[in-house]
Amino acid sequence: MATVGRESGETVIAVGRRTGAAVILYLAFWGWLVSRWVNDWVLPAGWGVQPGTPYIDPATLEPISSQLAFAVEFLPALAAGAYMTLILTIVSIALGFVIAVPVSVARVYGRWTAWLSLGFTELIRGTPLLAQLFVLYYGLPLATEIRMLPFVGTGPIPGQAFWVAIIGFTINSAAYQAEYIRSALLSVDRGQLVAGRSLGLSQIDAIRYVVLPQALRYAIPGWSNELVYLIKYSSLAAFITVPELFEVARTIASQNFKYTALFTLVGLMYLAIIITASNVMTAVEERVHIPGLGQTGTR
Amino acid sequence: MSDPLLRIEHLQKSYGDEEVLKDISFEMDEGDADVLIGPSGSGKSTLLRCINRLTEPDGGDIYLDGELTSGPDYDVNDLRREVGMVFQDINLFAHLTAMENVTLGLKRVLGMGEEAAEAKAMAQLEQVGLENKAESYPAELSGGQQQRVGIARALAMDPKLMLFDEPTSSLDPELTGEVVTVMKNLAAEGMTMLVVTHEMGFARSAATQMLFLEGGYLVEQGPPGQLFDDPEKERTREFLRRITEAEAEGTI
Image 1 (cartoon, rainbow over the protein chains, first blue to last red):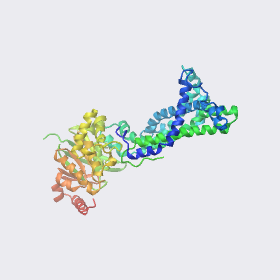
Image 2 (image 1 turned 45 degrees about the vertical axis):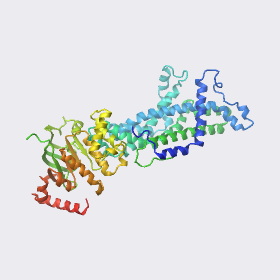
Image 3 (image 1 turned 60 degrees about the horizontal axis):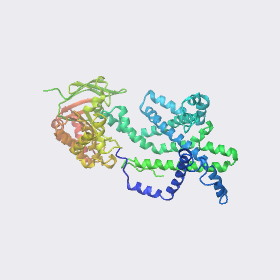
């Protein structure tokens, strides 16, 4: 698409402004996080530090700050939890998107499918996510079925609870994303669809080539919101035993009773992830911006 | 004389209880540029939309090039390849450049390759004088330029017939001229076109026939000289007098 690769002067300035301190913080956080994963799971034994142990011995930090020493001691475990959180979020939002697009199109342009789509979104949005996860994990034989599949829970492949959580978050996120996309579809002037049809495009092609490319752009701000929510809601996977960020912190805290310290640490990690996600979405929004149309929102 | 390019017989269309088109019949030969006039709500747009079946007629038959196109056996998408349409609200695809607006139909409907489509689109944009705006997005173009792209987009499909639904009505007065010029050239080149417009200058100089539609009836039709100077029906005279006056005052 021709819009991709275009960069206005304003974008360059905005990016320039964000550089500096922010970039250093990003690099520090993500550099550390990724290096942790590489060290703990990728590097052969004997390389780097012992998997799961801090880069710096907490004992050496103890004289400087006991809080810092405490944080450093548990960060390796939290890095593993953050990995789960990120995979849960990214896979669920991506699969949810794949479902949300046809669901929203069915809702706006379908006849009986509109009712089906409405039923789906209302059912999912109208019931608690936690209840949905419980039904999927405890109520249905899903977990048992998944456990029977090859490789589940072996090596780097997470166990069945993780997959159930993916299914739950995907369905839940699909419903919310469908709502954002639906309102974006409605905001594309219907005349363009008619113009597409008047060229001989079928209804589905006119939606695909004319309406959707615009609607998906308009949906980005709302959709970013859903991404941010999902990063945080993914912590509900803790209740079905997925060792994601929140669950890791809770497990550690239940042993040493340092709840406040651990949840503060975890909160900061969520914050770093969410600020990154929201900045990435702003950059995407600017990149796909249609020249001459309005102004993109800068956060 | 060969078959007319467009033949409409006893066309009828209702919205609910309201009968918008009542027994409309007329013919257009290839190369004709007919102008459809009438008060608002007289069914002009509906008539155009019945021809390319953006609106399905309730009764009567429409033949394009001798083939019955209004029946369920004729695929609407095939029909619309043969009939181009230009809209009052222009309706360019907002996310695509002028060039991409024109190539979309060529690629996705006619299945042309990228290069062939772009060459064709460029030729079409040249025809409407916008070859230097090919990479501009609709929001970066003036209304008149947008509508010329709209015309190029429809023309690129090589239609047998072009329908214009008040192509200048949404434009500022100073921008209508460029669009009318393009339409006049098109008529002079022999494109068959049916035009709903209040641009009486276009009607006088380019129209083969004028059709006066009122209350769903085709009240009168004839060459522009006849309708302007010596209409048979008093209603036609009255409508044309009002519209000519309005035009002189610059309110249209």
